[in-house]
Length: 368
Ligand code: ADP
Ligand code: MG
Image (cartoon, rainbow, N blue to C red; front, top):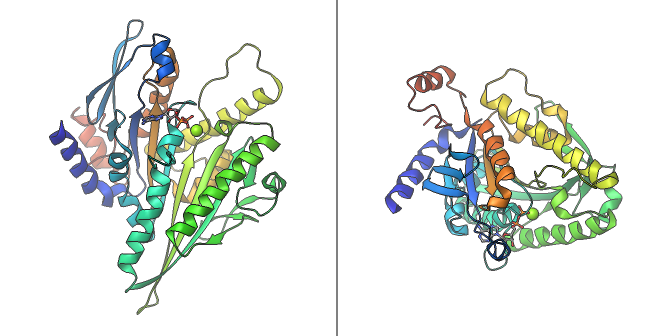
């Protein structure tokens, strides 16, 4: 098993250079919760190996899903080990996105942010970023800028604004400049000299999110949380300037609306989440199918991600799943959604489809 994980890791490292414009998908299945165990829930998820997951149920039989990595659930350290190259890429001037998709309770926030004891991708990214910059500081001068926002319904909320976060509602506008870079007008952006400073900002943003949620009578799982870290480097000798960006996105819960008894605000909320996740799925599918026109403009969520998804950007999607039989339907929906990102015929389309034609690599996703 160790050997298996090791060979996967090697493969992942080999592909990091080819990742431009492509989307890597990691599946992470959380453990059964105490509550689920007590309720007699059983596991429908079964690990095949480090890249394959099988769903097994009496009603639906057994179906295999292939990803770039499968964690059952793996440790926070192991998961980050397979993401951290992206931090180097951002310092090298790439735009990078890491996002988590899945139903509420599936482990998105645990993966992206984690707990104090078990830190997730965001705090580890911060540590890694400053470590990489420390390494390169004799050659380059670095500037890090951070913003944090939430997309609730169709409103962007500035989580680093000094006042009441909900007051920024309606004021933030997503724009693209001539070069295609996304900028959010009126969004607070703070420069961070140290990892500690950036961590504190993240904490402040999270606190503000709670304030905003109370104000707007919502739950945090019903909005998308976006952390934007910009890295500008100026070469001390050549004065060459590079700008990279890391987008860390904890998406709103993907669960379908239960039909009974939900109306009004909650219904509007669900409709908007559905719209945004559909727009994201369409963009991802468009990219994986090499479509000429990608529908970024269909939602603010995809507009925000426009310069960090496709093109030369590198993307890592987490699909977070519950193992419980009671969540089977949602789990299958999530896995299917993630599978849309898996038919990649990207920069080397002809080669990739040829590889697929012999049947061997058809489901392997990103061509290695
Ligand atoms: P989501 O953000 O998708 O709604 P959470 O990240 O809040 O879900 O996870 C729901 C619960 O499951 C939390 O109590 C969390 O600590 C736990 N959990 C999630 N993923 C893991 C994991 N990989 N290992 C242990 N516990 C986990
Ligand atoms: Mg969450």
